Amino acid sequence: MWELLRRHGWSCQQPARRAIERDEAAVAGWVKEAWPRAKPPQRRSGHGWSSRTKPPSR
Image (cartoon, rainbow, N blue to C red; front, side, top):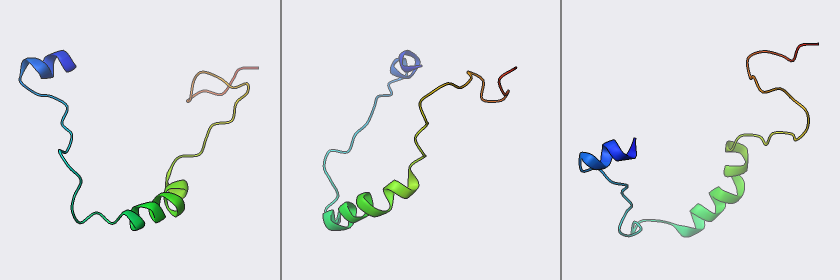
């Protein structure tokens, strides 16, 4: 896909600088309090099955 995008002049873009309005204290508070609730739960390690749609056959 990237080859196709590059051929047409597209590239990954990143901001040149951080926004002046950025509030570092608010960002740190959000990362500490809200982000753990927003991120998906971690998967348990152990036996399972490869298909997400069919349960294991017994």
